[in-house]
Length: 385
Image (cartoon, rainbow, N blue to C red; front, side, top):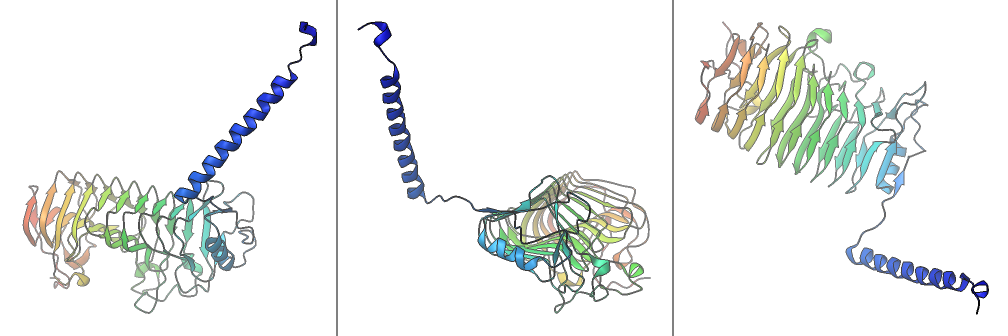
């Protein structure tokens, strides 16, 4: 047979047949592996039934999306008229593994409290979820409850989280009415990183003399294996960062600033019966009389402490400047305080009538302390001169 009469087409056909067979075999093998290990495709939604441009409540639509989909991607501001997703009742995240994020990250989607909201914006109680590129706006000045202090019957914080191995990344919590921008409890193995907590709560001078409206930025309690790092806090009116966690707690490279509003303390670490936490490489700075206590190790200045002792904290390599008392150690049993840098103590606005000091120590047991401290008890309810 001559070269002209030989056609390559049957060869190509045979190769196509072979390729289809190979691909079919690989697909069947992959499906078998997927079935064996229980992997399933993730469902994704842009939650189109919620509209951040119309000003109407979106909580029911968001609730449906979180209940049905694995990945909920919300709109960030993309054109004039963006209001945010209006929350008129608490949105609940209850399914393991859910991602709540922005569809246009790093631009952030906004969840904003409706004026009539009298509960938190969001409660998450699940495992391995992630919240990223979301701003939680408590809309404090427009809320009907803005002048009602939080107590056991009133919970106006922005966000409550609990679960195992979850993450909060590149998110914000701001303008909470009172209590806290975010709380985390009964949790383990979680991370809160690269997020902002600011302008939460009010002091009496900003609330026509009403007390009890102050708010933490982030409050961590009854937790293990927590990582709180690379976050930024400013002008929260109670304590910017409260660490009442337990073993395996790592708190580092956070930045806290007070230049516009007064807060009682920047970081407060330790609570009775809580064991172990490392607090390191954080930076706290304040203008005059904008921060009472920079970093507090132990909790004797607060009545909730009841005079008890935190256990085995390691507080090192932090930098604190400009508070009335920059570093206070009061109520610690076991642990180490070392290599912290304090400077520029100033002002008079501080709990329990303490005098300015860069470094003060009171009630400690079996603690290795860096040198240079002054003895200044700070127990709650101490009489002022």
